[in-house]
Image 1 (cartoon, one colour):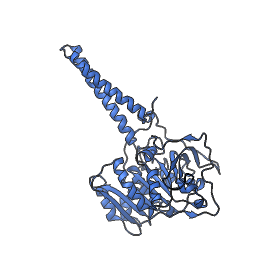
Image 2 (cartoon, rainbow, N blue to C red):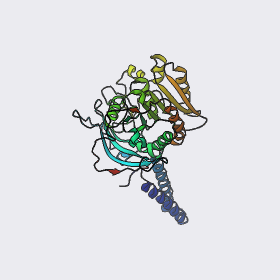
Image 3 (spheres, helix red, strand yellow):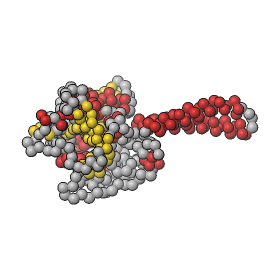
Image 4 (tube, rainbow, N blue to C red):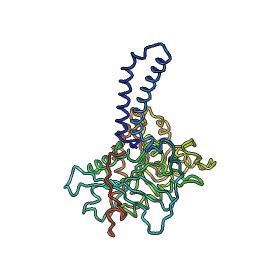
Length: 397
């Protein structure tokens, strides 16, 4: 069966829609009678054409926005709550399942190869597994001058129900990161790209759900540990940052505000600042108003001690989060540092976010610690099974 988000299915659907329209135009004169058969024929032609056009448009929109990534996702067949995986001490936290090289416009052919790896990340504390996830290793990661260096890490999160592939193909995080590194606007940085949803299709809003999945623990504790153990990634909080759009933006700010020892800088693109139960989330709070309040970021800025973190909130004057963002600006206090990007116009979409990512990375470059010496050295990539070394296209998804 063709991929739900693949280009071949979109082309087939578009051809079917064109064929249905042409057939309707050709048959319409023959269906001009007054009998019930003519009426049924006209109705069938009309609704058949409409259905074909809507299906083609729906497939294109789904591929662009990443609403449903697979057929089982669309049909609601993948509803399992997730599996807790127990790991033995010394077990591998990161498994590499594929990679694709990228190239810089600068330096020699040997120096300019960076790599995007498709990986599976296992959380020892949460018992959750992040897959698929992607790791971008910049050219400097493989250069002799940085052979004994540990790199800062940037976690990029999609929205819900987005896919991490869109972070590569549409939001172009690896390309934008590489451009910022080459322009010396940010230090050489290892980039991790994931979706915020780890448990089937449930939108957990990156929470440690009472009696449920511990998603915040995965991202704030398990992921930093796994990356530091598997790559030459600095394990200091000032060397870690997180960026996300929509739901990913909420998660990014929450991680920094609630767990400043995990991430010292966070960027939200069209993010929001509080969450509610709905059919996609289930019960997030276990009936506790206190748990709900603890995950209200505006409430935390107003009432809790200010964390020593840097926040960048991006919005536009016609977005729903414009006014809440202004409330966040009014609520923060030192030592929290807060910056904003406010576009004159822009929507809750990829086009808007691609306008915000380059200045956001430049902003991050002044707040993210540069690579630090690591005299002990570290493997250049995870000592994990690459079975087999699957070619990974950055434009996939």
